[in-house]
Length: 594
Image 1 (cartoon, rainbow, N blue to C red):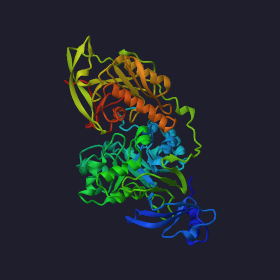
Image 2 (cartoon, helix red, strand yellow):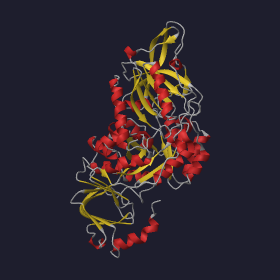
Image 3 (cartoon, rainbow, N blue to C red):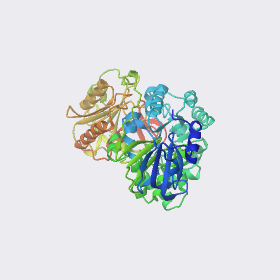
Image 4 (tube, rainbow, N blue to C red):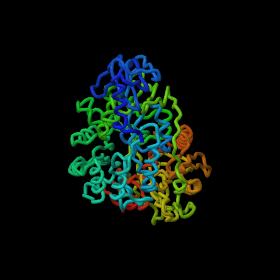
């Protein structure tokens, strides 16, 4: 554990007073003060014991013979960036490799919700993630997952969590709150389990994360807010953002690999003039390719500035606002005495090039290159054997029988760059007693293969929006949130090949075309993560996206759309091991319409 302020307070006081030398002094920079929204030129920052000791116009009294002096040379001294809501598993990386990928981009604090691994490995998996987070050279705070399963009765997970598990986790040293409360119908309807989890969190004095994936801002929304969630990242419009902050929530505006929700909401500040202190920037989900090629929170801040935010306000939304929300403004989020010494040097505040990254008083990256750090953590063998299918599958497992010559079927409609889907309908032909896909109208098949308890279950349905125009299939054991296996394809024989291949390798993503494997990303840890470096995983992921494009798919970040098709807490239509789910009504529905 990083030492608490009280353990080093005497050292900080001695340095600030000039009685003892600092470990490091950053000299001659422009201090970006997020408390006062000022840019203070010609200032020095002194660091001792991993924390800021002196922030002022002249730190010469803090410099001794052994003090490391870094010349800022007029560059901006920016607080280390915070990601207020994210899932490490979405990067397909371990916490260690994810941290190594984002540190050069200036991220020094992350608030992670490991509900993906929780759905596979339960409380044991959360503890593994918690312990790996503690081993990092940056701040990786963990929220206890709230919903496994996310929608009880509509899906079955590898493990279940409830109030007792939440209460236990609240005593762990690195748990800072409850992860996003996705079961918003449960809260609205007064579920004792959901309210019990929230009560255990609040009794521990920690923050409850929200997830209100509905456009209904009437009594249901007000009931959800009354239930205790303190933030929400599911807003997609200015109206959503305003409604949340008026009720005392923080509006978390996300820019992930596939979610572009900042531009539509930031006008609540830039045009409507709302107080920006209630707004936070986050990523939610970023795959490894985005991290390697585009950045992390620096990318989000740049985007927010491009959308019209004042640069310092954008930085506040990625630093002090986040820290304050989690009750940690005395520890992180600003360059001020006593806080953890997390800081970026940048030569331009608008484009935000990340030239030096300091975390806990040590240089951890320079000019986009990480300074190597040893991390003492290894995922155990029992986290690597989680694809528990009963048997190999055949093409016949994907047959959808029906009577007559045609049926009218429900179809999941993919929406580019957004988490929600559309509930579509299509008239499909029946040949030899089996419903046929309609490639000409972009209707192909989707299946969810049970992979936690080896039940042998396969749920079949239809999906539209990928644009596949050849014989192919893509399978993934990343299938939010229950993380069974999703298979999408135009060829049932290729669907069987893809599913069986993932069973053989222990999880991941693969794509078959014309009976041949053309792309593979191995994810052996819980079927969700790789412990290979981010650049390696990004290269494989890029190969997957290239293969999808070669099969006719033109969607931006189409893999992210694929991975969310089983997310039964975001409207409108999803697939689970229980069947096809109408998420506007939270009930199972038939594949065929009368």
